[in-house]
Image (cartoon, rainbow, N blue to C red; front, top):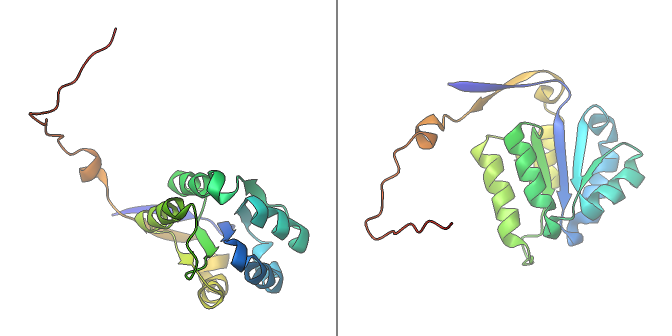
Length: 161
């Protein structure tokens, strides 16, 4: 079994689709005291809004459709993000839905908790585990990474000079 040490000061990603930015902003104002104890990351416009509303430093990434969701995914893989708060709109298709799905997928792959609405965000942010160190279990992907790659008989590799 593999574990990752998660310190008292967590990396929290804050993301919201346009129709949910107000809801996330309201939630963040209510939970400012909790959020102030952690490293905050946010995509594009959400980061700008929250920085003004909270008067806290926020590591602002690109807008979601411009690669911000993928940047957050990379930060999860690198171990910088310990908790994702993503208020997404389940009733509205997004032009960057594949990026959203990839972000949610990578959070699940690396066993990072995800809150997709106010109730789940409230439950996680108020957990005693948010203010103490924690050993997050990491799935063992060694066998996947070390697997044998079978050659396809129909695959022809062409070398270029």
